[in-house]
Image 1 (cartoon, rainbow, N blue to C red):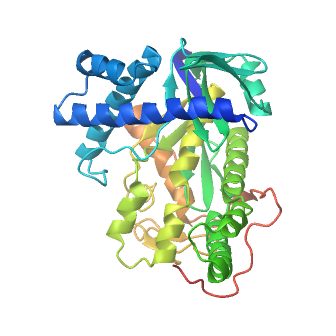
Image 2 (image 1 turned 180 degrees about the horizontal axis):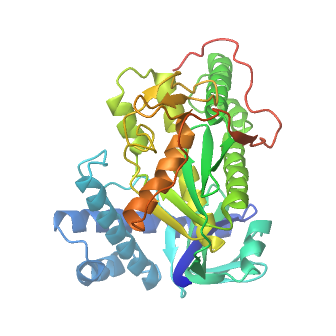
Length: 430
């Protein structure tokens, strides 16, 4: 049995109750000065073609110390380090062609704190300001105590920002886990799709499709959001419309989607907990590349594909596998949904491929050997096949012949009991 040590990190957001005017003004001043230093440091490092924060600190520290003499010095260090990290990230994205601007810009920020600038207590947090330490009460929630009492270690660094008169503190918990590589003989190919996650178990030759119908949820919120926007914007306009913001917030779209993801991942872990999991490699913004290649997609379908959370579900699955010490391997997903898992020939579709109205079986047939099955099941089978051939280098004993197109599947239940509201009319996108 091989063991691999991996460090997991979880960020937890804590919110304060409305602060007094004195505390809010002190924190707001630090927040604004930090933003100005961040912008100036980023511009200097970009113009001088350097991403080293130590080199930039030799020039900028004295300048910031004289300009903002009342700010604690550690905020200057954190602002320069923050600018260095942003510049390095911008350069990596620019090489891949994933940037939207020619120069790095600062649209939003949070104040970085090392262990000299903040102290967490059981009642709140102490933060250093230009007037000394101030106590800020916090509202601790169940998720924080889960990590705090669950063997996770609190990192020495934190970040915070102030919105109106409330403080938002972001703390990081870390934990070292051992990813075991036990040779149980069971291999699970997990294929993440827009409306389902399909799992193929080898050598039991059994498939499970866990249906989410994410496209129906996304489109349902598109129509509901458009109806609300049309109602409130006609009466009160769009700019500064508090009623419109409150109505959109009441949809709780993010919470519903997050609930679907967590329930889906829980079901996946129940199936694959006793074997090795094979997943595909999903690059960043792969949905954008699909939209660019498919020129016939309209705005609604493009939005549906962008909001399908395929990569988000894939990321959560990997994090939970590592957290529960379940071994996993990532393989190249090329041609996994279009090649026959028996003979490798190109498959021919027997039914449509669109899944706009939710999950439906998409049958594929091999013209050479006659193998017939659902496209998602074939994708999961090919992931197992690639692992056995490319990683372990051994023969594959997959099922042969024509098979029953039905697969065992379970439906992920949405928290509020309704996956989508009825579509009454086509929305007006403004």
